[in-house]
Image (cartoon, rainbow, N blue to C red; front, side, top):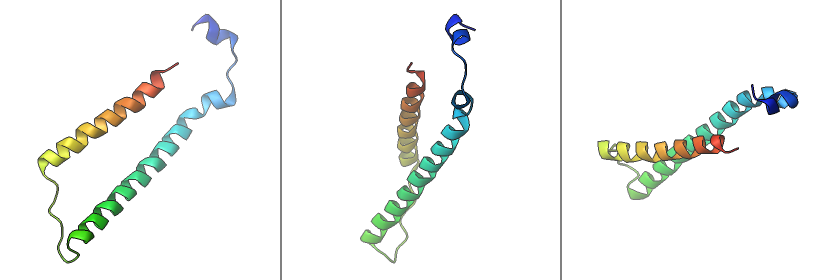
Length: 82
């Protein structure tokens, strides 16, 4: 332990931040997922309401995956700031 951490007593908030982060992250992730699905369906309906849209290609999945990796990297960098 560092000398500074021994001098500063831990509070209740210091110990309970992890569950809050998981809950907030889960709610935000679910909300963004639902919003994305809604916008996808709405965009498909604008093109042709009777026809199901073609599924995303492998390239589309890779692009989305790399975009999500960038977002995860950004969030991870937030945690490293002191």
